[in-house]
Amino acid sequence: MGDEVRSNGNVSQSSGNSDDQSHATVIDIYSLSNYYFGSKEVIPFKDETLADRVQRMKSNYAAHGLRTCVQAVILVELFKHPHLLLLQVRNSIFKLPGGRLRLGESDIDGLRRKLSRKLSANESGDEIGWEVGECLGMWWKPDFETLVYPYLPPNVKCPKECTKLFLVRLPNSRKFIVPKNLKLLAVPLCQIHENHKTYGPIISGVPQLLSKFSFNIIES
Image (cartoon, rainbow, N blue to C red; front, side, top):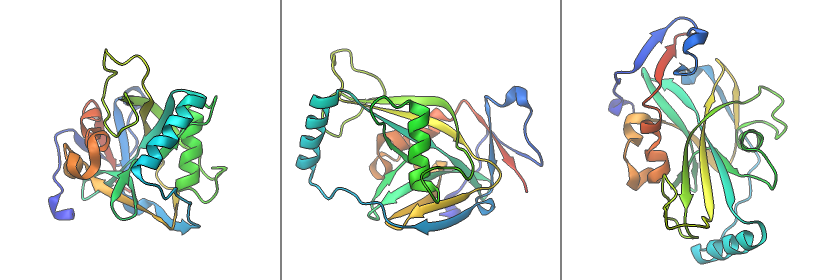
């Protein structure tokens, strides 16, 4: 993986934090080696067919309406290049950390809860808080199938699911404690970009969503 990494034009290096004035458009990225990675008990997954999943979504929609999911875009540095943290399920499916909101739950509270459940030692998340930033993009499902759009099609009056991506900024160190049935991977942006076949449309579109930012690599 390292041989495929290339630096891009909007990467800079620094021995300290960026100025507060540019915080909104600059993402401070710390080395992968700054972070500790451990494991915890497995999280049970529903073992269901696509037809079962569609039926479950139809039942949930009938009871609660639009389903909202929130996902985190988290970056680290490796080989002088930004890498995106992804969860791998069953050695084949890649996902951004996050999940479905509970009824009445806010986007930020829900994302913090999901990050603590999947990436922290305990679900209370009382070790180091998650700094959830701006919403980078939204994807819509017009029906219960897998097709998603980065906009709401004009002919769709009742979308079935909305997925929101949020930038989550990391401190210079923290512990990532991941369930044993998940793998946490750091994947270079150059490998993800427009790689729909491997990562799907949402993840492969993340590098474009990040193009408005400059990456400030913080050297330890």
